[in-house]
Length: 163
Image 1: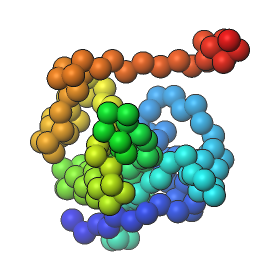
Image 2: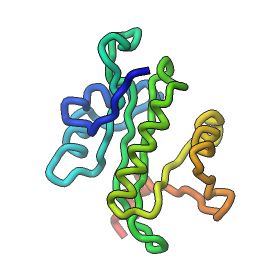
Image 3: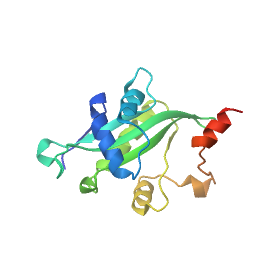
């Protein structure tokens, strides 16, 4: 299948938001947050888009059919790293190498920035995604290193910030 991978622009926020909403039951951000947080002078994230030509558009008429959202982070163990927050391809376009191409591009950007790790999370029940990532050479550090993914949010975050 003919497709291209390119850096996302602010004009892609509508399509990124559309794909985020499809992949999640609940979405806590606003469309304006994507524009501000990803395309301001000091962005909190970066994104790339998978796009097909008009003749291969989706059943709903979309040509932007996948994305990866990532940001740079730092590990005191290994230095620079990238955290890939999202990797998504519309279901009708899966199995055509698009997800692998998106992940490969994130890896290329990671290596070009001198990063030593590409980190991400995947739901334990998303067996097809776990299998996909393992086929790319990724390892489950929950089982190999014993990390637990922790979070503080909402009222607990507000309370913590006040101490």
